[in-house]
Image 1 (cartoon, rainbow, N blue to C red):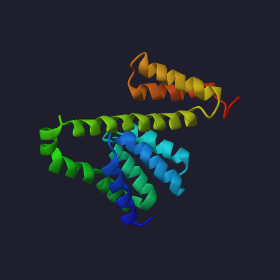
Image 2 (image 1 turned 135 degrees about the vertical axis):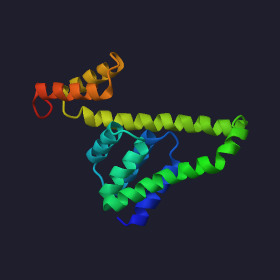
Image 3 (image 1 turned 30 degrees about the horizontal axis):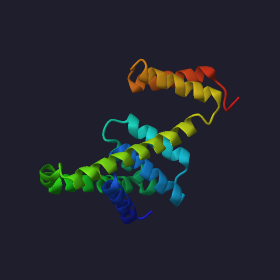
Length: 177
């Protein structure tokens, strides 16, 4: 894929993504599935890696997807395209936002954007959950275990995921049974 096309794809995603990297995941997933360049499983794998690495999810995702599309140069232009719009927005509009944030039109815009973010995140979670449990009852048990470790016990995500991997290995088996 040409570098200019990678750059403008991520520039558009960076400019239109309200809500950060998780929302970007949903938009990029639709974009990549429609283009046929990525399989759903590849996108889900990228999502898992981007949330596991330290740093902003959007930047991690841009790096991985850009690298897959056009090598290391693609990674560089994807990251640049992702961070440029929010950087310029903050640089140019922060003062105006502070002055007008309480105006009904501005606050209504952010309320609507917040609702859209919730829907997009819900779509990403649903897609990831469908893939995660596609292997049958063993995968369902593993997802439930990791969820319980995260939510009920409040374990660190790395520990919960490691426990889930260990649990799944102990259960053995390849597919749904």
